[in-house]
Length: 137
Image (tube, rainbow, N blue to C red; front, side, top):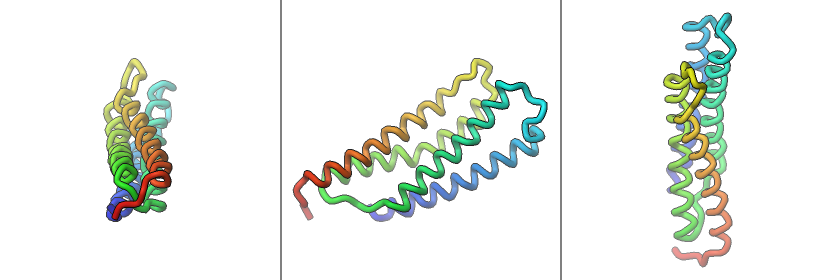
């Protein structure tokens, strides 16, 4: 369980690299979106910021992660961590697959955002449950 801290930190660092690379992609492939119509430019920029969001979420969680006491709390923590670890992948897929969408929809990004909500919520509930559950070694 302690290795989850390292996994979150690695996912966060890889996400930061992806953030920088998506910025470079917009610069090189689209001249930093100059002259692009407003809607597609907004889609690219928001997806770019979403990659940063997923990275920072994992970096913060990895910075403070500690295995909780109690079986229920640890299970919630594990499921929450898995949800948060998937978020940067989904948001990166959204950057490349959904930035050119004509109807301006982001179904993959929406899943990633809801997973981040679920993952953070599970970590919060796990911290509450760990204080109420009897300690079992």
